[in-house]
Image 1 (cartoon, rainbow, N blue to C red):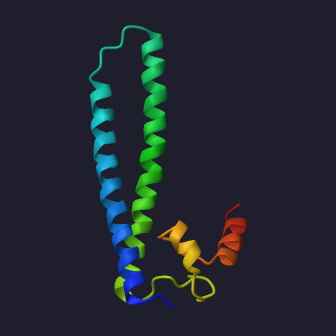
Image 2: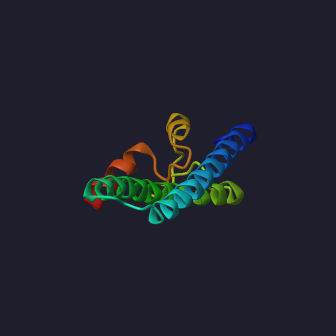
Length: 118
């Protein structure tokens, strides 16, 4: 089981990451708006902007997904369910939480879950 100090550390890490993602999302949205206003001179310009827009859109989707995971983890800290696997209800290892603060599954159940999703 995680100590109160460890929970606070994870909560602070999650909050810091949430702030960073929110800044990224705002910045990327502004960049995408700016690209709509560009005057494109040829197909090369259009292709370059389109490719950049696609990459930015993929990043936005990933970051929104991570933001949702962070919100879920923060709720779990409040409810006393943080660090417990959603499948087997065993504690998620500290090392796994260090790498992925918002992990929902222990390493064994994560592998099972990924196989089921494919």
